[in-house]
Length: 119
Image (cartoon, rainbow, N blue to C red; front, side, top):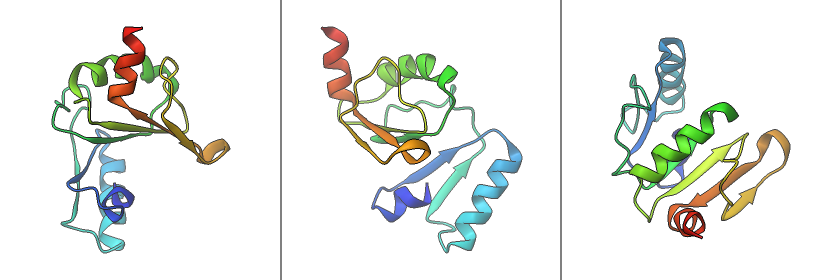
């Protein structure tokens, strides 16, 4: 979330249910000088409406990706970009990739994901 903000994405908001990870995220943002510029909210990602999000960054286990893909397809606008770290979305073709191994990320443009799904 902090890196997204540094790259000019605002608002920069993270959702986390684990109170320890939430506290750690807020601490790291404060320590980096970004307190009040980024937000970490204790919310369930499955219950958050993402329809007004245009940049979504995910670091989740592979088992979560298929149901998450369904949620993102239903809620995100065509102009949205999804970036997945560590594990790609198995049924989506990335628009671009960056890095190698554990540092690899996959970027998906929702308009392209929807176009491929319709074929």
